[in-house]
Length: 292
Image 1 (cartoon, rainbow, N blue to C red):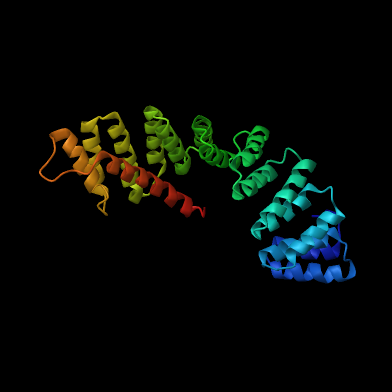
Image 2: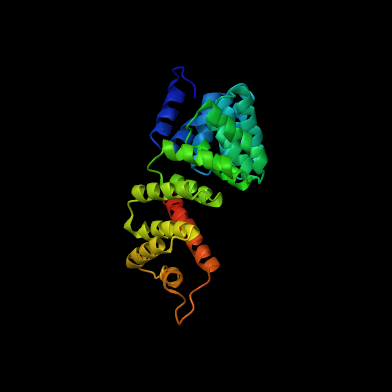
């Protein structure tokens, strides 16, 4: 927004900064009646309107880019408003213009990557997240996206490397640790998966999630065919499992240790699928907790 002292702009901006978007929009629109090409007032009217779901908001922001075509912030704000309206192709064009004007802006690169990814173009989205990571190593918006894109593209080694980087940057992030565990499991790198599961267990302070973490450790021991250790973990999981999700797992492990009981245990494939579902549910719960 403009920095020069201007009572009309300043008053509208004060309302915007205070979170009174309706007042900010009304003051900006009133000012535009006298100064229809004032970029600062147009921007306040547009940004306030976005908060209020005003159908005129995008029009204001589009006009800002016409008046100040070399302003990367104007293009970024337009791209954001178009994204919120589901107009992804137009949003992508606006973000691309912003990156042309300011190539090292990691925020715009990440926004553009998400828009392209949202259009189903996985490979095309990848360079934008990679560039953001190059410009700002450890960027906690680019790294989760990179993990997901590498996973979708089947580049599991790359995905694991980035997931580890993210987990190191955010050691208390349970999802980051779970992503390391998931990718390491897919690559059959069991020691790395176990270390990540234990990191997640140390970071997750929700007692209701203990069963998920025990399930992950059981899955690892089943992969290793260390049945006694799997049995100890299954018994521990049964104690904290209020919903009975460990019953079949325990029956399967008991059968491996003591032999097939009178009542047949579920097959290994079914148990491994249930444990993988448990990992996915655990991750989903954490993502939902932060609104993703």
